[in-house]
Length: 217
Image (cartoon, rainbow, N blue to C red; front, side):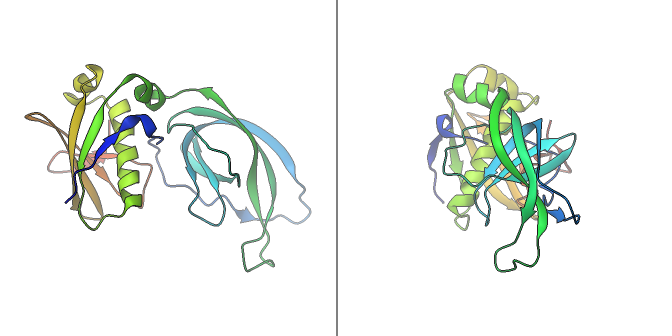
């Protein structure tokens, strides 16, 4: 097992009720491009598919909007952002005959910073992780980001008091559990809440009390 020391000052990562819904819907004949705008909660900027996606949530729905760009997206998970987007047609790679409707982001702006942004700026905390050997660097990154978000937003004690005191180091043991991973937080001799992650629901966090899994507080 490796025990890398990771610093919070370089993170972006938030909690949402669902995984992203498919943003592409059947095209209605005769529709034309239209410009829309609205505010959303930022979850992620996903660059792992054929198209880059702003992953955002609003009113309980998680959405992905296409934004193919080389610019650095620095929003943190939980920030409120404003988007201007266009409804247009999209043809999947290799199948130009399957034109469907999709959302394309035209502009974006920060409306209000979330708890994670404030946390990363004001808390000089480091994590020491113990990861299973089989986990990839990509999985390490997801786990690290979710741990940061949880630290910034949790109401659980005693973790909340440790965070508020700007404690300088927290150890996290990552273990495989069912269809996901369990994060065991430890600080000195204190046993802290156990956080459960399922990569099939990458933006939802759960707590495990030794008996049951429930949405994180």
